[in-house]
Length: 172
Image 1 (cartoon, rainbow, N blue to C red):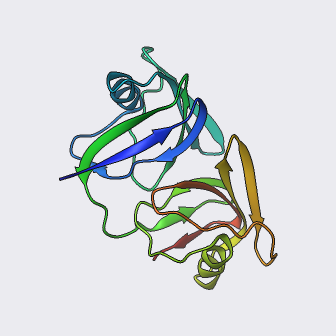
Image 2: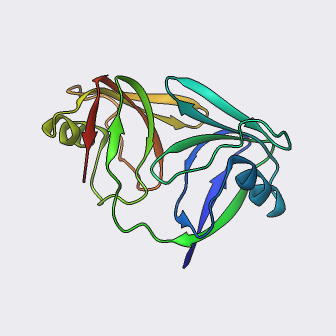
């Protein structure tokens, strides 16, 4: 068992689970965990089948299960941190990409990947990827495959939107 900390800023935060939780964690469970540790989070959103699916704290609707390898937007009223206990993720799960936008996370990833090298690795495995976007400082930062602009480092544990022109799978 290990514990990992997720940092939240005031506003929207694009996060992923840094560990595989010991007990299943739902959207409401994550909000409770953040709030019990001194934060004040109000919403968790996931990108599901091409649309947003929202859970609002305290309401019985859309209390979806959180999964390693997926990204989530968490709305926080103030900056805080939340510690999550679970099993360390020593290997990256296969990433299934649908045609269109995909919100994915890389819980475990070897160091050295950039936006371009990640997209090139996916393309080498047959994925028809076009773009990768990250949420940084309250706005989007985009990298298009094959272009030299915005070639940022990919962080293990972070979440990203990847746009694919057709479905595919990537394994590292």
